[in-house]
Image 1: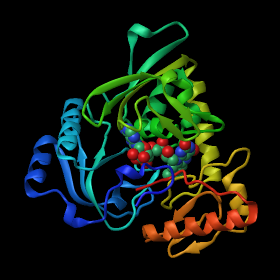
Image 2 (image 1 turned 135 degrees about the horizontal axis):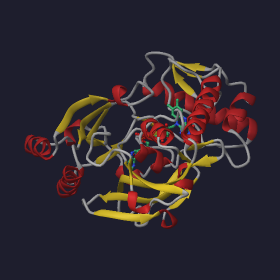
Image 3 (image 1 turned 45 degrees about the vertical axis):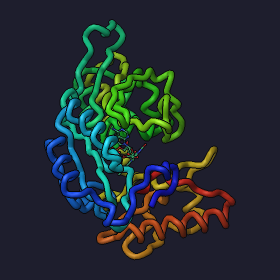
Length: 329
Ligand SMILES: Cc1cc2nc3c(=O)[nH]c(=O)nc-3n(C[C@H](O)[C@H](O)[C@H](O)COP(=O)(O)OP(=O)(O)OC[C@H]3O[C@@H](n4cnc5c(N)ncnc54)[C@H](O)[C@@H]3O)c2cc1C
């Protein structure tokens, strides 16, 4: 199943009979250092629920990733990429194909200053897509680089943040991004300047998409120099503001719906009287109406069912059809 802003052409099927055969499974294991089979996606999603995916592959370095992409293309095996799993919901059932998970340990995935590009004002920083955003933001604070404090407290990976054009407080990651490196679905490396990438609210389209599918492998950022303590203090403030507004200790994917132009999804949901509404073990958070939370033991259908109720009630009341921000696979 695939809804929202997802590309239907690349959906996985729930038909177990179309799974990889033994030879393909052996070849996949030979191509990739770490492969987990028949994976319960609850462990890979901050929603803490999800269906089963045939294989989760974690390439150990950039070469392994490129070889894996070539093999997947050659074998016509379906794939998706995930980072921290903080903006996805994997529907129930069996998803054939491979979920590629980038991790911080992949070669060149640490935040490294590009010394050649340093100026008195700032610094260019290259970061691997698998790097945790939190690790990157605190690295910036430690190194006295400002520009990403508004991202403090957003979970997930740098690659996921670029793909989602994640942001907060009226800013988004694209504002400080200079270049993005991708691996295509044929295993070729491509690099694009951010001026050539179409960034919009929680959405990114690379040159060549959708005909070619892109997996982000690295981002290059330009950040201004600033007092370290000041940057760290701003990050702490932002995290504190989030802590006060957002539910904690429950599964979620952050804001479930995109804000419609000129309004807030949370305001419309609250106005429709839906705070605290439950379906199974999913609930519209009483603390933040745009969070659908897993109160413990929710199945994906609970969350999807609640999403549908919220959309239809808000449409009835306000005439606005909310669009999910969460990517539903
Ligand atoms: C408590 C909480 C608070 C949140 N607050 C915010 C917020 O303030 N602002 C905000 O914008 N978001 C927020 N989010 C949502 C989420 O954290 C962001 O969207 C995040 O950037 C997603 O990164 P990820 O690595 O977890 O991506 P995933 O959830 O793993 O993937 C999201 C999408 O990106 C794609 N993707 C992931 N990695 C790559 C890659 N390397 N190349 C190509 N595509 C890729 C996936 O295929 C998927 O379509 C919040 C989530 C939670 C749980």
